Length: 201
Image (cartoon, rainbow, N blue to C red; front, side, top):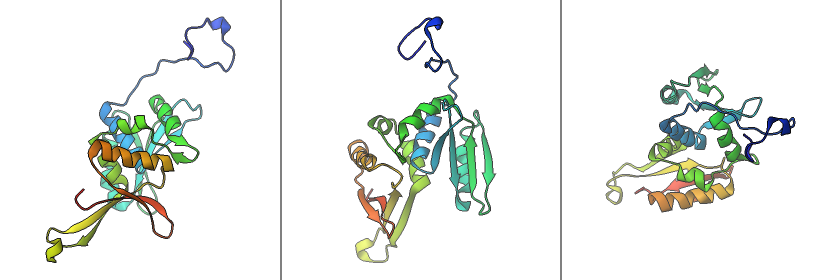
């Protein structure tokens, strides 16, 4: 079986692409975690053949328990766990064939590209993983003043790793699908692309 249909083996030449039966290991829930994590602190790297990809994530000392919790969700696949000199923890899954196509579609020109199909596949769990990986909350008022009696703050998520087009698609997706309306702006001296969510959201 080839991408163009069935062909006799005698008609194949070295380098022709053929279809191969592979075992898919990831459950729907695990795919949610991968999609959310890839938007956050996760990354996909190819194996030598390029027919499989390894999912890796890392977190600092304060998020070790969170990183290990994510690893527990992949118990059927297994991960290798390492730490560095700063006590940051890293988990690496073994390469999986079903992740190869995802890696090929997401990494384009040194940026992560989020297609319409990618965004449509996101679930509340995937969004929660993304926020827990890359999001932050800044408390601006502690409710001591009458005008801010219920407190106020701002949630932000860095989206610098995404292509400019992906950032725009993400803003539209959050508005159309979840009625969330973050502002996309450049933050700090390094002009990092950031989504800033209003207080009520």
